[in-house]
Length: 378
Image (cartoon, rainbow, N blue to C red; front, side):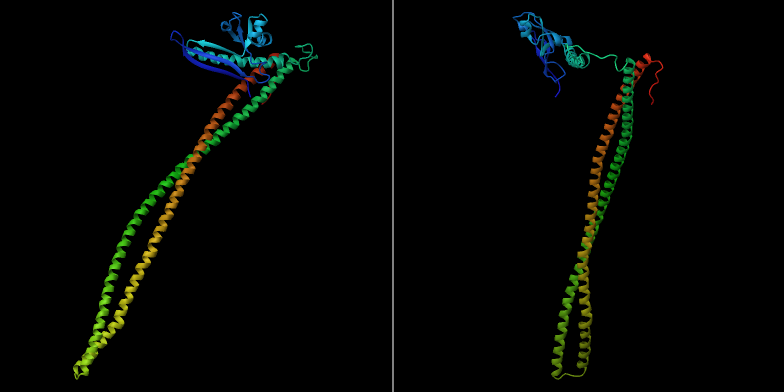
């Protein structure tokens, strides 16, 4: 919890139609030790019976906080014209003045808190009896010169810490910048890989489509050939049966009394047709079976091989695209880290600059009293 100054800012039109800017300020929360109470604004009683006529004078000071009554009722009861309040309202004619006044009120209250803390911690302490009296044993443990040297020693130590922090911040800037550069390169590389993979996959898909079309045509042609061959084979078997029937008829005719030359011709014809039926036709049947097997094997193994390769290539391209996403996320984080390091380096340099001024100021204060004082190194 911290001491809180509430400021409610509004704009309105007055009775003449002119806009006014109103600031209502109040101390709403007081952290122990910051202030004695929330009553920090000094008002003046104009008419005891008319609170609305009271006039706001200022943000109080330490003397006001320790002497003025708390609240209007206490002031009127003790016949005083000044009192402390927790709030006040002011009105301004233009927004620039109102904005400046708002910040000034904040600064005045903040200064009052600083003064009140110092009043209790340094001005009054150590307190004994009677009230507000400090009993200090003399001589002092530290001389004025010693205090100046101690202040300088502390300032110089703080400077060394600030310089070390600034150097570390500079290293962080260089490191994060390198990491950001590497991340940017990775994004570019993975993006190129992904694009090349997609290009190759597209070319493969085009080639596969052409091969599939060729296979379809080839399979159709072979199948047509097999169909025609099967038709021829069927006709051949029919012819073989007809020849057998002819031989039987011829044998019957011969048994009826014919002889000689017809018997010889029938024997030759029978030998020839037997050889055709048992050898040539069997070989033709085997060729048809082989063709059917080849077509079936090509359909079963050729297409799956190309499809499997297509699936593998598509998976590889998906993985490369995922790598681009991962690299992009890493790049965003690296860029943010680099930007943060630059901001922290700037803050560290500002602290170092302030510490350097404090160190030089403290050293000058020592050397004004002790001209022969040798500065601390480094």
